[in-house]
Amino acid sequence: MTATSDLARTSESRVLTPRWRNRHRHWIGWLFILPWFIGFLCFDVLPFFLNLYLSFTDFSVGARLPNWVGLANYKEMAGGDHLIGISFKNTVYYMGFSVPLLIIFAFSLALLLNANIRGRGIYRTIYYLPSLVPVVAASIIWLFMLRTRGGLVNLALGLVGLGPVPWLSRPEWAKPALILMSLWGFGGQMVIYLAGLQGISQELYEAAEIDGASGRQKLIHITVPLMTPTIFFNLIMGIIGSFQVFTAAFIMTGGGPLNSTLFYMLHLYNNAFNYFKMGYASAMAVVLFFIILTLTLIVNWTSERWVYYDTG
Image (cartoon, rainbow, N blue to C red; front, side, top):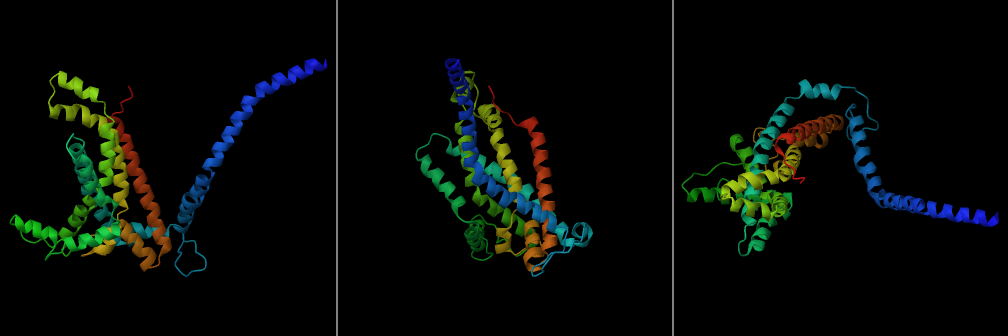
């Protein structure tokens, strides 16, 4: 009887040991992600809900406790603040031009730098270096480059017979100047496109060459379709980044001239730290969150029609 019991316990331990090991491995996994999870709760989830609460208050710097005002901040955004419409139009204008230009510029250079040319590693490094420059330093550099008199951009235009352009002093030129500057940081996108291009199988190009396809046909029918997931990723990140544009306008123009570069984030900053309307600025942040979320969902919904995933 004793021998039978020992045999049963031995058999049971053999069965339970793998389960115990799996549970042990699960706990190790949870232990490794615990620091990230705590950081996510403290620095993402908690600030989001705290900001959502403050958007329904009149909280200001120096106030002891925020007063609940309901939808007053949102009603002010809808009808009492004429600058918010201007800032939204400026931001949409900036996004509408900077995102497509950045995608086309970065993708075109990635195609050139993916070719088998001598010293392409050096070229890749040179073109990537500007993206490593901090935005504050880049803004100061472009402030000098875009000067009406003596600026490098106007000097270059003068070489081809064009007159000086008042880039930062006239409303009609201020936004194009900041869009031109946004192309400065194309290096990050270019590296992502290069990684995508190098993931395309060369067998597809060889098969197309056997069928007599030209370089243009290979670009249109092979390269671009297989790069659509990468383009989709950069499009989403570009939209999010363009709605958060702030530093360049803050340093170079301060929102002027005549509010022509008063972007949404700059208007939010002014309400929070210049006018000390923290509750109102929190409401603007909540609205910005839902605008970006809506645009992301729309682009994601349309991706089923133009993004090709090579699952074969």
